[in-house]
Image 1: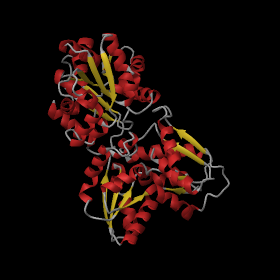
Image 2 (image 1 turned 45 degrees about the horizontal axis):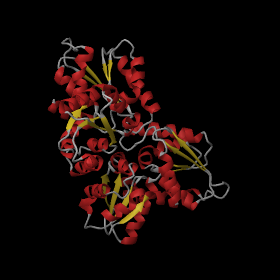
Image 3 (image 1 turned 135 degrees about the vertical axis):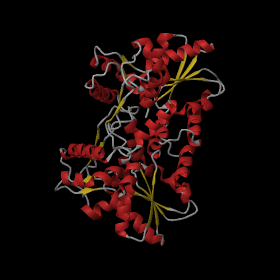
Image 4 (image 1 turned 90 degrees about the vertical axis):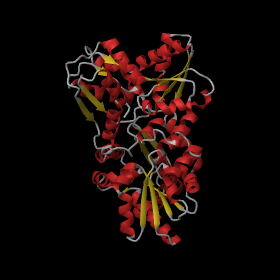
Length: 245
Length: 245
């Protein structure tokens, strides 16, 4: 469900590339697992993709990008690998400069926050940034429940970010699920610029790896590690993303 | 976190038995996975417990009890195995007779509801029961977040069971996580008798398997398949259960 937001942005920019999408539905969610598990599962997924002869890999999950990118790059030696953390952090930094703001609030899973990956990436870009990170463990289950504009989603967001209302700055959606609820986050943080890491990684693709070009046919191959988890469930999000793209 | 509610009730009744507790923290939650995955993971956990020479097995998870009990019994041939579905259904049926009520509402995970295990067990006990099942996928993440008496937990419960307010009957907590929020469920369903499947399985133990007797020392051996998932997290629930027991 998270990675689909990244796929949607990539296809909007590169409609004729061919895509292989792997959703590790047997092992979601990653955001509450240990580093060790996240690395092990990420490498298993990558090995599956490697065997399909892909020419570039986008790790469309903040938790895996925060905790397993180095190991994934080693495994994929010779194939370009793009994570979501650096592009997201760069986009947030640029937005903060454009706004004359110094305050960046990162919303993410517990594992991503504990990894410190965003704080480190942002400090590296500009040591003067004032970075706050907020773990939001209930947002992924609420999004998967389809509560994208539900009163209890709005109330939960106020619970998580309420302390930051009344101030302004840049809020970075540090989980690929969160673009589904970007309007709700914007409502919860009036006056804040909200940055979507799915858009950021799609923007960064051509810049870092070159355009995927027009040799493909726009085909998507779907792989789900637990295809029967909830019948019709993945398809519902794919349809939603296709309508939105 | 769910199984601990069952362990607490077992220890309250059989304080001198020895316990081995396996929490499959690498693979939670089960409630959103497919039958195939749930069976595979349950058998892996059981094989770990089998190697410790246990004398009886309690499957302290409704999802595994609903979907994998037959396979677990085959794997453990010769060792008594008790699931939570039949004891929970029996306790709910007895409460409905005591109350002169015919209406039973089962609250459970999506996988448990889809399995139909509770509806079948209840129909077998009494075909005249009026059984409704409600999937409550956000309750487990809220409980794991520690929102046991949070306004948003109460609001979410009203969302799930609101349609049943104003009527009366027996509500069965068909997930071993839910005893942590039994007072909140009672508040959401005024006039309903709430049955806790953790208590029911502990009550059924001696009846079905005989008392575990006094040969042990009350020791608990803890096994977590992803012990590092959230440092200190499991311990926090163990402490909470110990205080409550």
